[in-house]
Length: 283
Image 1 (cartoon, rainbow, N blue to C red):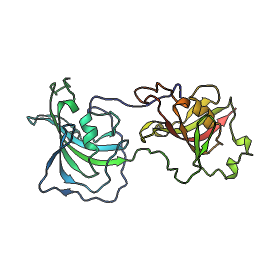
Image 2: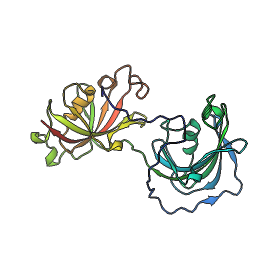
Image 3: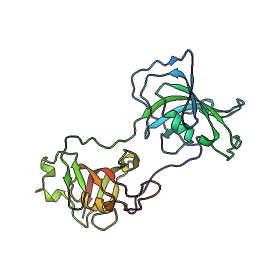
Image 4: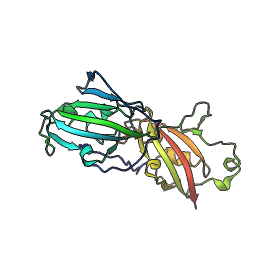
């Protein structure tokens, strides 16, 4: 969309972000203490040691994770602790909301795991001092993954027919196109140019990375159809839907953000995938 709203968060700190309460509906898990913990090292220089092994699902990019942590310098000076505050910390994994060492390390954890991360300065705060943390500090975090809420993923479309238009747009109906309310003859249930439409959407790159979602915000996006307020593929694709219908739009870069893309979120010449639902429309 030309004036798309990317509600992405950015933070150079794992400290001081607000937390909300949520629950992870996993099977009861009895964590097991690791008798002989072994420190492992990743290619980036991150060192991690699993001290307690949980039995819940593994965290992955895009998940909202809930953790308890205690952060220390290498001399064991504690600079922050959610445990001490009795307030777990939540963030979206892999979205740059925390330091790099956290995004990498927590992605190695399963719900119920406890892990010690030893984070070099390059994956922490670098040459920048941060409160009680001196510049160029190696950081040590004891982390427990308490729970997670799975992130949004693009809809599965295997076995569904793909419609390709002359412009290069590909559309896959996720709702049954044979339902009476979605019949082509039901023109009263279909918007035309000039109508104000209300759409829920989740946008993905080809590798499945979620870059924006009205579903996550709980607020449908509104625009005037055919008025050039959004990218070309949206004006064309949404006009093919009936009220209440869901579909997946696959847009070549010529119908999206063009050769330049929308840095830093959308790369140059990016094909975009949108799972959309036409919630409502009005004249």
